[in-house]
Length: 40
Image (cartoon, rainbow, N blue to C red; front, top):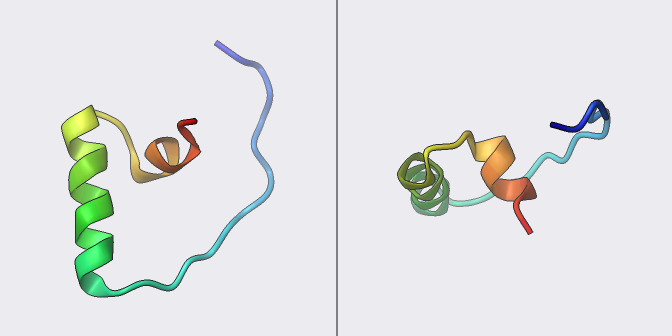
């Protein structure tokens, strides 16, 4: 596990449908939305 702390923040505006899709994808992967968005 990395000891690096994340300190930069990204704010994103999207449609409610896209937000729900991202949240569902993260849940299906068993991770948080933040971790899901950082996955390469």
